[in-house]
Amino acid sequence: MDAVIFDLGGVVLEWVPERAFEQVVDAAEVPRLMERIGFHEWNRANDGRDSLASAEDELVSLHPGEEVAIRGYRSHFAATLTGMVPGTGAVIAELGQAGVPTTALTNWSGELFPYARQRFGILGRFRDIVVSGREGVIKPDPRIFAIACDRAGFEPAATVFVDDSPANVAAARAFGLHGLHFRTADALRDDLVALGLLPPRRSLSVPVYHWAPRQEWERALATGSYPWSGRGLGYDAEGFVHLSFAGQLTRTRERFYADLAAYDLVLLRLEPDGLPIVVEDGFPHLFTPLPLERATQVSAPA
Image 1 (cartoon, rainbow, N blue to C red):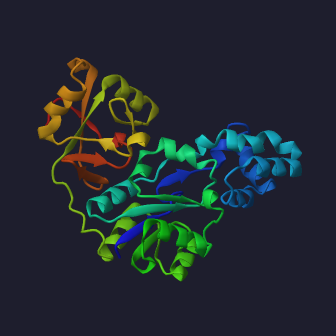
Image 2 (cartoon, rainbow, N blue to C red):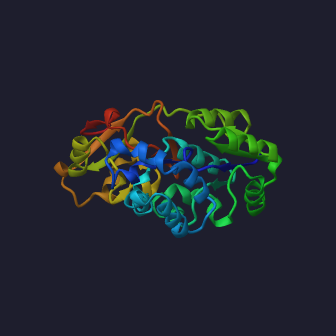
């Protein structure tokens, strides 16, 4: 094995279609609505389309009473992208460090994929992304596996394909790829170690730290979510949370937070056990949102 192709939805990115409908319909009604209009069948067909206007019009003609909800899906599609699958970004980063080329192959409407491309920085780590809607072919059709391999210059017999759909994994294996069924990022990493693509994980033995403006940290404690990577950098855009080792704290503070008074800045300490942290360019990067329950506010590194 010398290359990896990743599915996106359910492997790298989280997609919850109900969130779009909840913008225009009561949340309790959404499951019944999706069943009435045959959403999943319709959406699967849309994965092979570059544009959705005609498909949307056709579905409205079949269910005119649901027009607002049907059109609301495309209008509010951004709400369906609820974040990144925790830890997968770390696996992608480690593969990059190991010199293993990675690409992505996704069933996704060509019109809607730019929402993901613009929002998630982790996608920039892939050499290429094959989008079914742009190709007019969807998984598990073997033609799209051929497109992905040919475009990247991958030999199928030496390439791993990762997907959360058993049907797609089975089709990939029939095509000649080494298919892996995605369950969790940790399980995927173990599979890649067994295939010789990654070394066993070496756990960090020292704590890591994160500087946070006090205002942002207090807002996170109130809302239960810290959406930042670093100062002025969103977690989704970066793909990870910027951390520091103890010896890097002074330099980090001087470079990014010198204008803040001591009271306006919070230093957070995390024990790295079990966290998907990858050291890149000498700095630890956390490939999951900052876990509030594991962050301890300290005055200085211990």
